[in-house]
Length: 101
Image 1: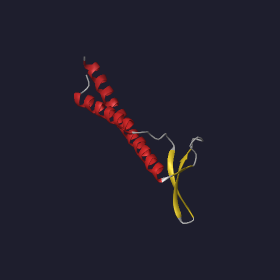
Image 2: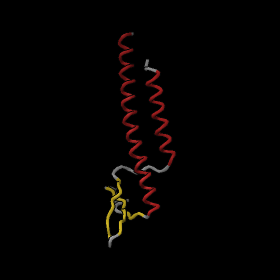
Image 3: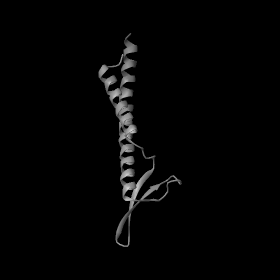
Image 4: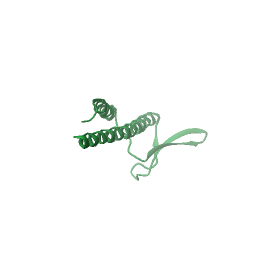
């Protein structure tokens, strides 16, 4: 049987991931914002390995939106990594429990 603390942590991580998905759109993988300068002004474009989004120029409003999307994507990736670690600990605990029974 897994520790109730690990189960609680797994649920907390799942809830945090769900909350981030509900907070707004999430950027796809391999998408980033690239700054560039033209005639002394700073501009931004959305760059991607995906041909559908390749080099889309961003307005100020779109820049903020995409920055939020990328931040949510990166945070979700971190939480999913932590969730994987917690689930592997739960699995190891269950294996040890079965060996002793």
